Image (cartoon, rainbow, N blue to C red; front, top):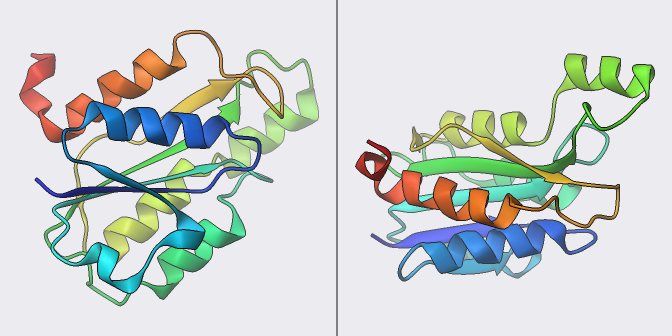
Length: 159
């Protein structure tokens, strides 16, 4: 299966997750969103897209990439979305918690756009936790990313 992982990263945490996902899927290619070429999506069987959550949304570059995909260009392609985020359980800020509950995280708009472009949901979207706005990743998140990646390419491995 030809798998492409497209990501954006601000402080390096999402990049670490994306590369770990790519390393967990045999033959996967991992590309920063600003380096994606039009031909990168040719013959892709699986597209995984990830972004840090910035103001409850994906980055502008990820949003731009998704918006530029032609209608139904992902017809039949397995798709999955992920983000990095702070845990509202770890943040003692009622306003932030309230806002996160209303607006959510970057993974949902990414998934929505991938499905709208014709993609077939390959796994539940995933959020990976950073301990502060700049990181580092919470302990165990790289292992969680590997497990999630395997659920995309081999859904029966969880049974």
